[in-house]
Image: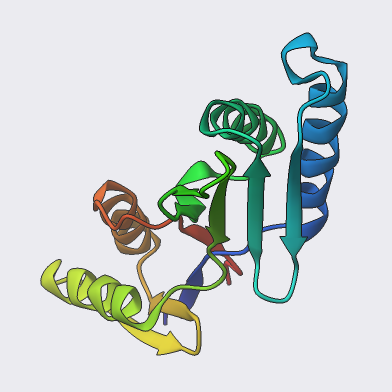
Length: 165
């Protein structure tokens, strides 16, 4: 009798790596000539998982954003797991932008994943468990087909596959 295999579809970001990318960004901007005497800052709220970028102009905010994106990518923080709010321009010319970091899979996306798995008509079960989706089945090839289908789906979120059993 074949044993049951499973894996979880999740989205987890390493807070320490986000913080490291943030520190590298601030260090790099401190060295740059175009940011000399400029006002800019990035605040990391670890409970809300948001980054708030601010600069004394929209141009500087864009430069800050570009450097931060590069540092996040270098530290294996997927940019697909970040939702950028629209830039808010203040009356004094200052600008602000909030990055929301995805943690867990939102319920509506989890339901979409389950539906896509069912539409494959394979002998696997997909169940939502809080902010992740567990996929279980007897055939490893079918589980790999599910992973390929999820990766190929344009879900607009970042997903990882963990806890292979």
